[in-house]
Length: 274
Image 1 (cartoon, rainbow, N blue to C red):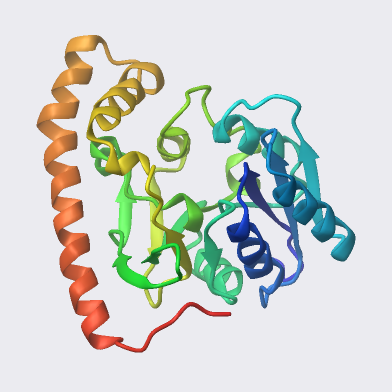
Image 2 (cartoon, rainbow, N blue to C red):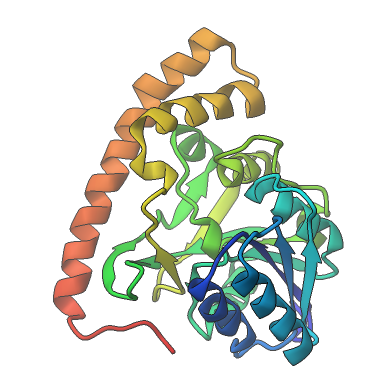
């Protein structure tokens, strides 16, 4: 890694409201300065959101916004930003999540140390009022077999290297779970994702409409990954979902609860970096 390698940060936005400013500020405040923040607004109807985007475009030349005429979902919006990306590294942050200010500096050094094409990190889980309620700690090394069972890579922490992989990876044209599909496609080429675990590097805002909180949608969209991304037939997709995904997902949630209890007990006064 060269010290001046450009990082392209991919951010979709849609009626983000008050969360958007904090997300953008967390990117612009990075101790690693050579970045571009590529925002694709998915036809927001909230004037406050569009006004904020115009403000940050004028405030910092690293912020580059594309405005879509029709809403097509976050996967499509992310792809629009990826196509515009000029950086060696592609990173992701949604418009209501945040990064620690040293995320890029730490994670890029970690990727150089591991000589890896894809990395992720631990992240803190927050409520809308910025209260930290938990932590997600991924496995130290994630391979394709593990990722087929369920997604263990937090999109808001993921970074991949286009020099090692080529600039050819985009979100598949499915409405939900595109990030899992993307990481499956990347791991089928590079084999492993390494997780930075020294400290959590991002803050995930737990949304009421989160896909993981809707059990019926969980079935529908995860089976779609097996069918449309991995090419499984219906029987194999159902078998993977019930025999592999559900046990793995349940174990992940239980581990997250235990990790969160230990983290909160040991860090009673932790707060989101401002």
